[in-house]
Length: 394
Image 1 (cartoon, helix red, strand yellow):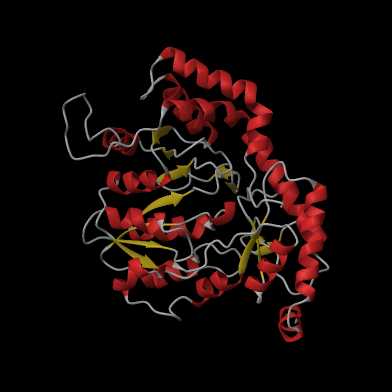
Image 2: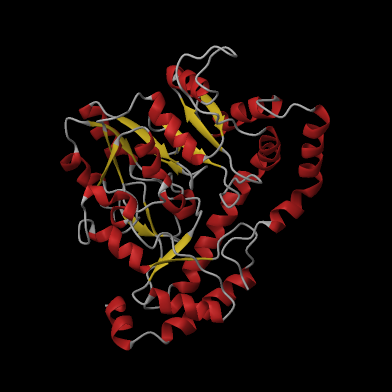
């Protein structure tokens, strides 16, 4: 079976360095907020073009603490996308605020800036764009709207560390950026981990205080916070991996461009599309894609097809694992039933949820395995009902 994400080979490639780093932490005996956490915070801040970084327990806490640091709470509204993992709105709910959804751009699957202003009310305090699948959102119009309305911008970069928008790293564009180091992420640790990055010293200081029970000094607490500290062992692992991240992201891009070339003749599916430097959407794999100032890091390589479930089943039968990110948009989840936004409220997100399918994507994915994936996909699409295939080709 070709996995959708393979983690073992990355460990084996770095095994001596990772094992030595873990052993050193164990020998030193400093397991909480130790030297590896402090060093990693500086290294991630520099990587993300940010002045400050705070290591936290996971990506959800990064979002939660960022919103807390911005003093967003009960009665406030935060605009975001319905096509993402529930952690995005979970963080909004945990501070007592209300998520307000706007639909996605059907080409990039990211939040559609053209729909933002219609969703702004006197209660709106922030916009929370999600750089989905490693694709940067169209940030210039988002930031301009936020500036004009006095709103804060919290970037959900869980899937997009290293992606750039007009030459700037995601996470450094808004007021604050939130990272996840979940094992399957482009930069993953051996458990849960996250980080908040910002150029605002006041926000940095508040997140740093809130992550350790709301206290600036041990046993003296200014407000209720969280126990949300990045583990020293995880930081040590991440420090070994971080120098390789750019080459891993480059490998993901090469794999994505190869997929696009292989899949170009195939009708019945839609390949990923990405923002160009001018903000228009272009197919990936074009000659200038690798030099574009807008760089996707392909956390996922996601196609779309009308007969998604049948295609996924056929691929599985041929030894190719796939995943659906995400099968139910957030406005249709039971947890958000109180928002009373039923089927048809956000048609682009609903259509994406019914049609998206992520293929195997990781830096170590071989060309031979990609060819196997494409052969299996070609065979699966050939079995689609003729009317569906013809409709997609039209």
